[in-house]
Image: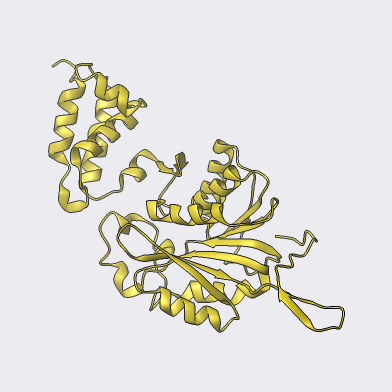
Length: 305
C-alpha cells in the first residue's frame, strides 16, 4: 500500500474527531494536528492536498487522532500552545493557556505604569503571563512564582526558547517575597472542588493543582488578597482571573484588606473574567502638615522580588 496523501489523512481526521469531546471544528483541528505532526505550517499543508505523507508522520498523526478522540487536549499532544501570538511549550504539569487569559495581558499593557515597572506573576504555570509581559515591555522587571517544580521547569524552558528575561521563584503564592510592586497578575485555581469532576473532559487533563480552588473556588485567591497590601506599592495594581459569578465576592474580600476595586473585564461569553484591584495611593502632606491630594507615591528603592 502506497503512502497516503494529505487530503486522505485530513478526511480521516475530520471523521475520527467527535464533537462530543469539545471539538467544535473537527476538520480544522485535523489540519492543525497534521501540520504539527509534519512540522509544517497549516497553510503549506492546505496547499499540498495531493502530497504524499511519510509513514512516520502519518503514524504520529494517527496516534494523536486516537488520543484526541479520547479527550486528551490537542496542545498536550503537540506540546505547544499559542498565547499572545507566541508558541508556549506545555506539559501535563501545567494548565494549558486559554484565550481569556490574554485579557490580563491586554489590560496590563494599557495601564499607566512606570517605565521600569516591577511586576510579579503569581502561579505562573507555563509562564505565559510573565513571559509575555516581559517580552512586550522589555524595560519591566518581571518575576514569577509557582509552587510546583514541574511547572517552573516548563516556564524556564519557555523563557529560554523565547528569549525572555524573567526571575522564576519556587514559592507558595507571594509568601516569601517583598515589594514594592507596581503590578501583580495571577491566574490562580478558581474552580470549586465539587465542580472539578464535571469539567469538560479535555479540561480535566490539566493538573488538578491548577484547577481546584477549594470549596468555593476562592481559597488561594483570598490568600493572595491578604498578601497584596504588603507587596503592592501605593497605587500598585493587581489583575486577577476569576470564574463565573465570583467577582462580587472577590471585591468584598478585597475591601477588607483595604484594596480598591476597579474595572471588571468580561470575556466573549459575558463572564466577568478579570478584576482590577488597586492599593490606594499614598497621600502627600502640605507644608502645614495636612493631607493633600491623593497621588501615587512609588518608592524609588529597588526592594527585592
